[in-house]
Length: 182
Ligand SMILES: [Fe+2]
Ligand SMILES: [Fe+2]
Image 1: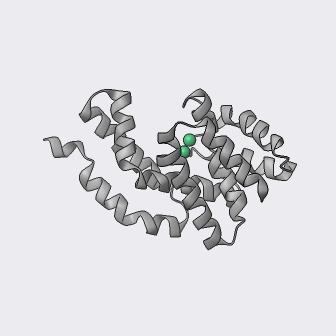
Image 2 (image 1 turned 120 degrees about the vertical axis):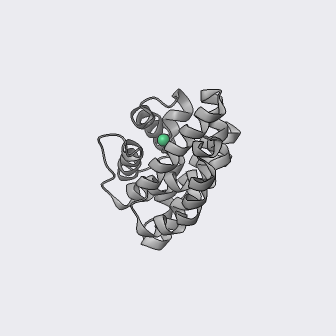
């Protein structure tokens, strides 16, 4: 799909390097991998992964499962994506957080939500870096990262995704713990 290349460029351009390298790219990698394993459209999975956090990237974290939708639509229309692709990406965005009321109802949306969580296990140093920026206190940052790790683990609803992250999850639990400070 030609659109994927163009969307990749647009998202990369609008994204700070940290987010792109440590979160969006790993999410794309895992989305394509899961799509291959589950026999889903890899390009569609990549589009969902590229755009799942577009709201957070443009406007900040609050309600980004909502704010990202018009932004993604704008980008997808610009590259002439058909309405069914736009609908699928919209559903990926609205359902990716797990905390919201909309749950992933399609294979592609499940793949994107799982890939998003998987990316956190590759990016634990990045999470700690974000936690420190947010909390300005190491103990609070560790607690924040630990909560995110648990949340990400609980988001792994695809058995293959869960199994492939189990070792990293166990290691993260050992290393990222406020108990270690006591
Ligand atoms: Fe997100
Ligand atoms: Fe994300």
